[in-house]
Length: 327
Image (cartoon, rainbow, N blue to C red; front, side, top):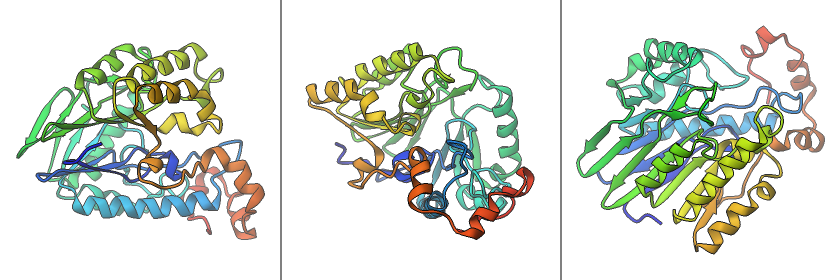
């Protein structure tokens, strides 16, 4: 565990949303990592349940309050669960308008994934839009791939761009962040999906983090959108990591499968054998897991939505993201 660096996960799958947003505090600087949060627009052919909307409302507020404390905000890549857009969207991102992003990025030093190199077309467009909207409120915006920044005795450094999953991922690239102070290291490795890419695992181990938050394998997509061989590779790479890193927080894609603990059994055993911890963000914070997306069917069965909410679900695709759901 860390004694000199304070790490506070703010939003994540184990809190009931799609996110890996985390606040990191040292005596020198406060860093807000990946200040985005989203819901899956459809899962099991169902829209988000009112409890999911209530949860994202609460966590959006938590992120905005954390941003008030931070001097640095990072963007590992341009998916909307990792940065906040500036348009109105009540279905996926729970953004009112440009004000939502302004609250996060205004007067901050924003350290971003390079918007022009190692980036796919959709993320390049989103990066351009961010720079024209939310980014214009920042004190400064700097590309960070492979760079290190010093703030007093604290160093914030970023990896080279690594694949969003396997080496040939169509989802583009991400950058990982390490915050080091007083000989302690916290590493944030979003959306590496295991990591599936062996070189990504090598970069993580080379950093020798004391605490690692990582986006685990997308078990819920196995045999559907992702080859099971890639899932196994990501799991094997993560096993090599939990054997060598004392505390690993597993999050994001891995926890969207209701049976994730069964799929991750070998990881838990490897961590235990090494005397290490493998936990979710909620468990790290001493809270109960709230896997809302993977339990969406059950939520609808156990807590039937109001008639007004059901009427909202029948809005057109164009209207539904522009009309705030009655929750």
